[in-house]
Picture 1: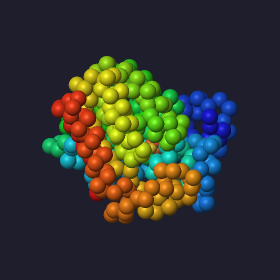
Picture 2 (picture 1 turned 90 degrees about the horizontal axis):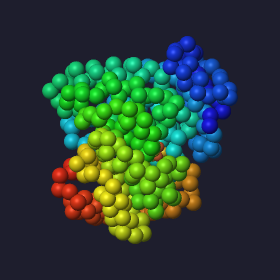
Picture 3 (picture 1 turned 120 degrees about the vertical axis):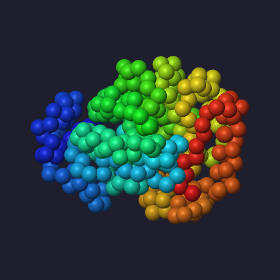
Length: 331
Ligand code: SF4
C-alpha cells in the first residue's frame, strides 16, 4: 500500500514510530529533517501522487487544536477540531483537501500526547462552557486506524469528560476501537453519507453506502451515539427520490434513539480551491454546474440549497421529531 515512508529524524526512536514502521514490511525508509521538505515541495501533482502516496511520519509542534470555521458545529457554543493526519486514503471528488495541499502524501503526526494535553487544557480553561471537539477535519478520523492507532489511544482518555463532546467523523467501517469499549454519551461517531447513486460516482475508494449503514447499525446496536452528516448535500438529477431512499434505508436500520444529531452542509469550494480542483478533473460533471459565488465560496444557489435542506428535514421529521438537526455552512 505504501512504498516509501519518510521519517523525521526527531521521532526516529519513538516507540510509536517503530510500531507504525513494523506494519510495513517492504517499504523503503528515508530519514528527513522536517516533513515540510517533502510535503510542501512546489509543483507536485496531487492527482498523480494520489495513485501511490507515500507516508510521512512527523512531529507536530503547534496548532494541535484549532477553532472550527464559522458556522461549523452541532450545538455547542465553542467548537474545535484536531487532525492527527493530513490527507486521506479515500478520494472523494469534492474533497477540499485536494485544493488545499499540493501533495497527496499522508502526513501522520505521531506525538498524540500533545494533542491530548491541548484538549485537556482547553477543557480546563472552559469549565463552564459546552465544547465540541471534531476529529477528522484534515483527514478521515478512522480510516487509517489499523496503522495509526490514534482512536484507540485517545478514546479511553476523553470519555466522560464533562461538558465536552467529541465527534469522530468518517466514511470508514473500521469500528474496532469503539466496539472494544462500552459506549459513552460524550462520544459521537459521525458518518458522512450521500445517496448511493452519487457515492458510487464521487466517493472513490470508500466503503459503499450500504456498508456504512451496516456499520452504523452495529455501532448503534452497541449503544454508541451516531451523527449523520449530509455534508455536502449535492444537487443532482432525481435528488429528491435518491435522498428519500437514503433516509428510508437509514431509518429502517437504525434506532432513532441512538442518533445524536443530523447535520446538513452545502457543497462549497473556496474560489481559489475550486479553480485548482476543477483543473484536476476537467471531465467531472459535478464541477460543470453553474455555481453561485457567496462570500468567496462557490456553491449551489441559496434557493436550491434551502429547498434541499427543507426537503431532507421534512423526511427526518416524519420519522422522528426528536433528532436535533443542524446546518453547517459558512454563509
Ligand atoms: S473521506 Fe473526507 S477527507 Fe477523505 S477524501 Fe473523502 S471528503 Fe476527503
